[in-house]
Image (cartoon, rainbow, N blue to C red; front, side, top):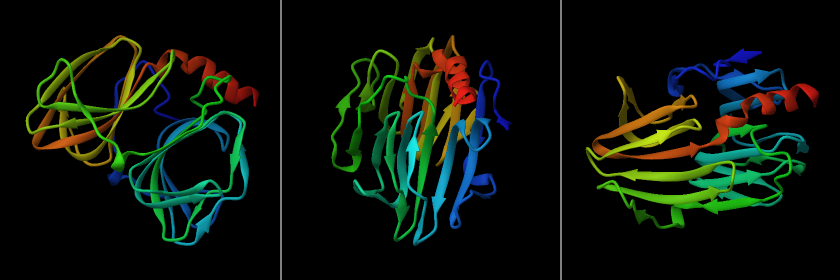
Length: 230
């Protein structure tokens, strides 16, 4: 299966306009944003757990990264409410589910294969720092290594940020509204920019909160190859 699989193209998806597609587990549905592969895939999705639903225990051979958008996600490592940012590296395992139901933004098979760093953050309890360059913009760092840089951006009304996305960029609007080129992105809209792009964001009149990842698209071909060899 291929969805938004041409990584040389700019892609915008307004995820809340998509239908929910059932997963192999009852009560767990998905809205695919990009995907290369069948059930084992390099994939980016919005996933919804109905109350009381769960997945069977499984190993994340290629790693799993997710952000809790609504409700409370649960596994044997704890309860992760809205605003939680989790990185389960390659070879980690768990049994996910949700007693009350939840919606999460999930990325699979997008880690470096040697990565073994677990990250479990509750961003709703984290502060932010003013951006060194752009007025009206604060940042909450979430994760950074030699491969990628992940953060939350907090825009005041009408604030603007223009940066190089020489190694690609990806973002999800968590709150508010932003404009990028001719597109207006609202809550849970997703944008992916290819390598050698410029990212130019202007927040709307109510400001915005945005999840942003930079750098990881330099390794897409290897990520896909790893999936195909799994």
